[in-house]
Length: 305
Image (cartoon, rainbow, N blue to C red):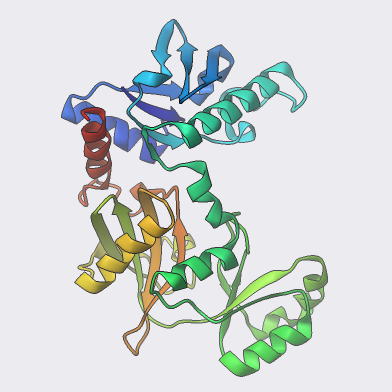
């Protein structure tokens, strides 16, 4: 059995479900909107075992050979939106999430991706050290809450960008002279500053041993928020860079990752971060790259083992 867990209408999960249907593969989609109707039995021995029950369906955890997990925090689950955090429904949802993540950590099934492997994304500086160890360059970086440190860093490295230190999504922005009146806010919010690396953005999705890459052309520093000027097109990644992408993904303990790369004018490849739960459909909305199909086939092949 293949387990999909999350919101059925969320684009990546829906794309993988569609690919599995295309392949004629049976799977069980655990809908987070049905969390109140979900019951989970979990026991630990030589392996994690138990049952999932939802809307009359029962799945033995031992029968699951592969899983693609994209759960949302309770606050973002539509069916729980009007519940208070201290309500029984909310607490039940938290228990289901905690129990399934525990199973995902311990099961022998293929899990895309396990919680421990995704944890490096919670600290960008820590993840950057792992990226460097895998052979990629990373931008010169400082994390500070001191204005003097930012000024010294800019004098040394020139143009800078700033963004969040954690996995919390933030808009990547260029540090300009108009930001000087906001520098006093640094004392309350340590911020990550990086040397601006010129060049074109390349997004690489690694699925097992496969690499899918595209180039993103945009006038904006953060192309995610520049729909009018953004253009995504196919890109052939050099073999050596593709190899390093696969090695980095394995080194992080991931089966699937979304890697943000940029090739500097001197030809050196920089990797900004590795997303352990990438929204790949943003880069492949029509499925032409075949990312969803590749993941579906990987889940199907593990089921057959």
